[in-house]
Image (cartoon, rainbow, N blue to C red):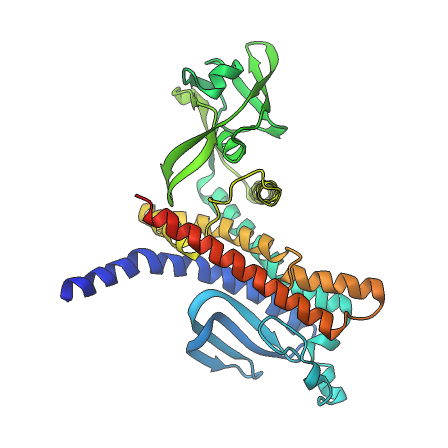
Length: 378
């Protein structure tokens, strides 16, 4: 019994604690974005919640806002005056009862541009958080660039078949500039089976080659994954490793470029997913994220902070999808309102929210199934 209890405590410390340290600040800053802009526009805020379900701890501030941290730490919400629920569905019944003075404090009665900015502020806060974290890392540690010089080509590999040779300098792959050797796996990992154009520099010549990455099982953070690889290794020469230092403006610029690169790669990944050109077995849910956060935390909690930057980008990006219940779904409704000159009917909005909720629950269950299958895989 004691051993079981100790094992549970160790498991919580190794998995749940890093997960909470990773996801809680990201969710907090997302909701803080909504909260701050809403306050600036004079919206009364009823609830600021981190997590869902019963509250672990709660308190009210001097403005009457209920702040709470809940038992299910998978997200959060800000409930505005005039909303029916956490998904910011307008409360049609309440509209008939509130006074003209209260209408000035209700979110649904604010001008369209203010509502749009309040909704957009959540994802924007996630991008700002990510850029801030990445900027701090660049200012403190700089970055190391591994010159994309091919040191070894695996015999019989995709690169060998495509004509790449040791000593080649990789310039671009599939139209993506290669600045560091680390860029190469990020470009090819989800492009197995595709004939990719690769520009290389061999001596004084520029060559255009084609390589088709092959699916390869690799072990890494989060377990075994099947990814596309071309079969090359970097040069072992110390001359190929360069440390780059940054000033404040240069660090912000590089952090912004890195953020945009992650966004564009994610968009490309999702396009392949939804056009069925890429398998769905790499999709991860809460269990998968907890596994990754635990393994990253085992390396260092500093690495966990940097992982939080990319999780923050992902959260901001996903929330911009035009799916009702997400911020992007609200922005879609506002776009219709701008075109029609009036809000969509209550019935249409209700149906949209129900479909959006069903879609998000489906994604959640599917991602969790993938996590469990990966966890139980021998």
